Image (tube, rainbow, N blue to C red; front, side, top):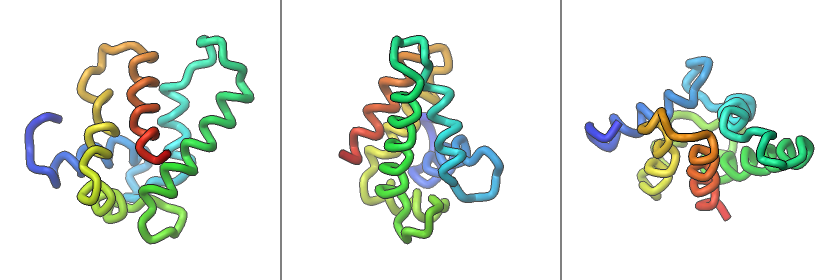
Length: 117
């Protein structure tokens, strides 16, 4: 993950999130990624988790869906990262360390989406 050109890193991070391999990130794929990071055992009620998840997905689409077609294509993601390389760092930070806790992944994810606020 830490090696390679910017384009190679963009491609790697993008395809980690592209669960079905269709070269487009839909709301459902982003939700699946969030569900793996947000756990109900932190004392947060399920309805608040669901609401937060929807808000985060909408923020990601607003920030990354450059052509506003409801899908984050590879081109959308690439353009957004080239405009703001910190997006790549934040999106990929918890992919590097597979052994970190879910709480740390959740914190990294929140930091990533904090870029949208």
